[in-house]
Image 1 (cartoon, rainbow, N blue to C red):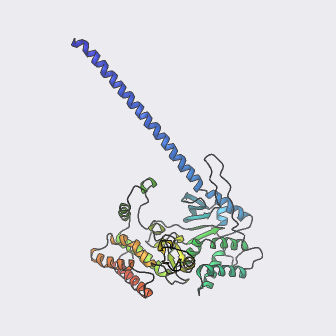
Image 2: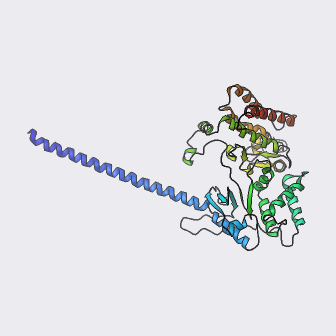
Image 3: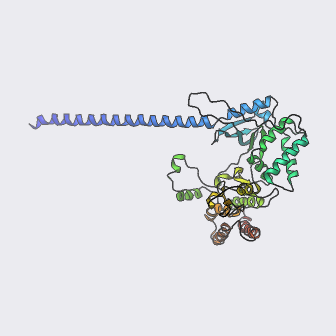
Length: 428
């Protein structure tokens, strides 16, 4: 009887085993199919986004077409369009109409930016819609003299920066940049390229600040395409997480992780000195006062020598322009009186209009950005005093009495404290 039962039990086990194998095969087949499906969808989305965002070839073709027609010219035109020694590499664009690429030009590595007209959305497999041109190269017109162009530039700068004593010298500096081939004269095509560049606030502000070493240097331009030197390290601190993780990581954890990816403390102190010097230079500077309306770490980087660079000049606005904007802004509460990310004034409840005076000066916002950055890893003998000065700095108010004097005192004390710690090191 036992002998008869053994084969039957073996058959049952064998059948169960085969069924289990079939189930596992189906399970893995389904998972494989699901993986392929999801992977294909991700690739489709990524490729579709890339083809819409990264259209540098359209920028180059449009710019070179204008150059070959004799409409525009500039220091980079020949290299871009004739010699092919200036070329675009990796796409960094985040907006279809604002093309950003890493690039090379001879021995220089840099960042290439180009404005692209409105781009219509298209589906994968369709031909992209042609660039819709904006008439950006129609000024100055034929027959305009150099003196008339100088006057155009002067009036444009005055409208942006207000009445400043040094505007004439700034105009001369810009005309020197406009002379792309350095033949001692500004041709009409060069003037058109320069005028197109000056319509972009980020280019104008970059030119204002590059002499003090605060922004990447302008290497060359052609029309409204221009190249600046590359800042090797950025952002100022932190780690850019992949987009699926950003919404899942709490901000407190993100801030902690950010501080792990920073240089040694003496080098952080030198970089911080650069930010303090930037704040100092744009506070009643050569060409007026400016406000930093987004002091996020992402807008700053640093060089191999740990010198700070402002990599996004769109975060900076002339104070004169800020006041004009706020003056006409209607409001119900203080929350309505915000310019950019964090430039704010208060609301005049009786007039229902925003006041002109910024609530918080640049220095207070800069100290808020530097607080965790500098306190982490600070020498034990310095930490308490550094923390005290940083909190005093963050407490600065834009409308406080004798703000100029208090601003200068706190700024000088902070710089002296940091310099004392790093002046004897090789990082200084």
